[in-house]
Length: 85
Image 1: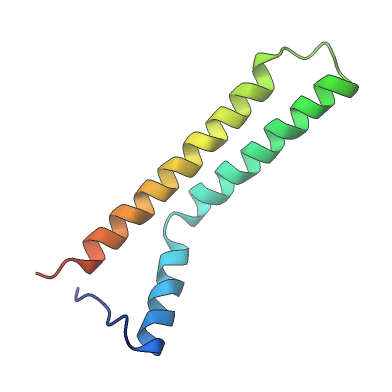
Image 2: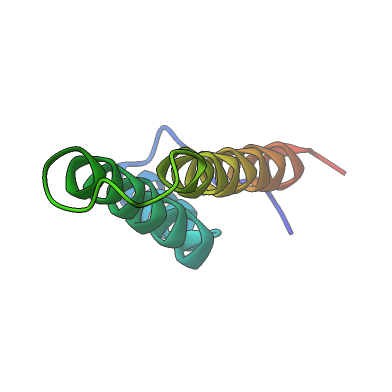
């Protein structure tokens, strides 16, 4: 695959669209888990004090790890796509 010409607005827009699709499911799952963990922390604070304290922290941590994984996959894809062979 040849790298896109980022000076051309049409090719740049197409490449940005292509990048948005890389690891999108992983990124959205991580974001969803981070929000779920924050919701669990709020629920534990105000409504369900019997929830273990490690549960919200663990869910947020897994969400953050997924988001970091998706960012790393996207950066790796970009690096490989821009390489000139």
